[in-house]
Image (cartoon, rainbow, N blue to C red; front, side, top):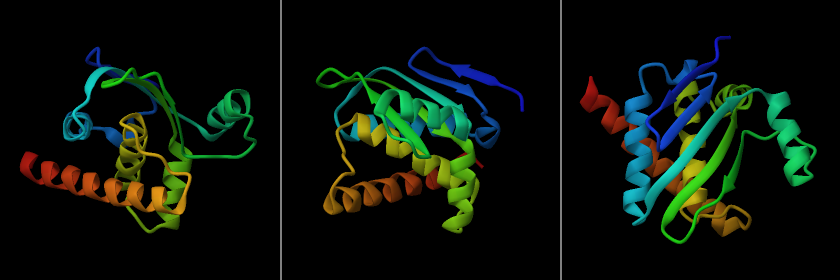
Length: 152
């Protein structure tokens, strides 16, 4: 698979971007919407779209977790200035889409929003935190879908 790169200096995308083909502009708008809705400014977010093995190794090396995951977010934010690195396993996204009976792009947008929501302060450790996170993810998937329809 071809490794691609997209950057506007604030939002940088690296790796396997096939699922986002033609949707980078809308995805970027949703990211900025999340930040705006939470009164945050953006320094930089780097998204790395990688495979399961790469993300597993990051999980082991950085978090001492020896299991597969769809996303790892490293938050370097300072107060209201958002900065972070987000690693997403495209293989996990595709498997989750099948498991939850969603389109690949919807699951990918959910995971992207999940990472950005972490950067603006949402957690997902407790049952209530997870519930709130899922509600926010659903809301921003809806924002993405509305923007997509407007662009058509």
